[in-house]
Length: 167
Image (cartoon, rainbow, N blue to C red):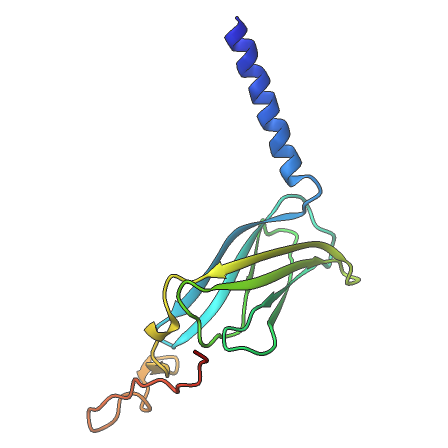
């Protein structure tokens, strides 16, 4: 009998602590990663958020991603649709992503009038270096035609990088 009462008390305590973790939050981070598309030689940050409660009409999500090449942060902005349970935001194309380096990301949920409803600061770390990508897209056009800047008519290939990344 005492064991059952103790188990019930622990279950109630666990539920109460879960409630406090999400109290006041509109969304929570559900995923963050780098996406490397070898075929078109691009890399992007990709962040997903899970809605915890309905958001006001006209809300948007903005993100500032640390620029791996240096300079100003890369920015993205997406409208939030009421019907979607998941929010996805992706950065512009990146250059110079390094393996095992942490890159800062700031995500904001904004009301239609621009007020900050919630802010999330996180980081994303890649488990591979961007050097796994070719310097130029391997294909061009809707039919995935081999890129003539990479695959030359004489049968040679140019996979060299432009060397513009900081060390």
